[in-house]
Figure 1: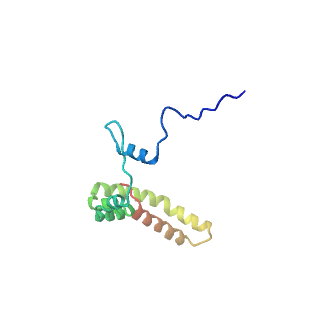
Figure 2: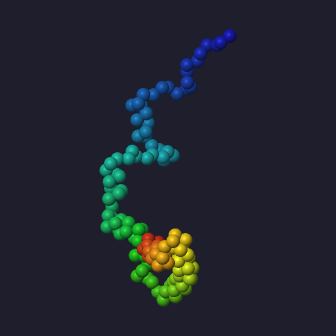
Figure 3: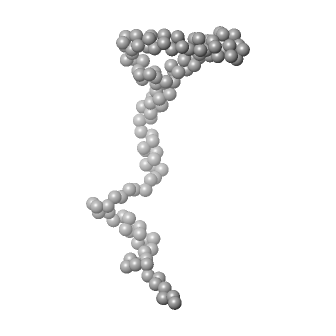
Length: 126
C-alpha cells in the first residue's frame, strides 16, 4: 500500500528570481560576496602596465636577456668547463650519427652546432 505523496520540500518557501536577487545583494560580515565579472573589469585587469608586460613576454621567450647584464667571471669559467664537457661528448656522437645516416661527418657537426645555438637562445642554465 502506498501512502500519500508529500510535495512539501521543506520549511523554506519557494522563492522567485526577484527574491533570490535581493538575497544576493544583502551581505553580512560572515558571508563571501564576489561581484559578477564584466568586460570593463577584464579590460582594466589585462591592460595595466602594457610596456612591462611586453618586456616580460620577450624575456620569457629569450631568457638570456634577463641575466646577460649580470654575467660575471665565475660563471664564465663554469660555462667554459660545461662547454668543453659537452663538446667532448657531442662532437664524436654527431659524427657517428652522420655516419649511421650515410652522410659525411661534417653534416653531423653542423647539426650539433645548430642545436646548441638554439638552446642558448631559448633556454638558460642560470
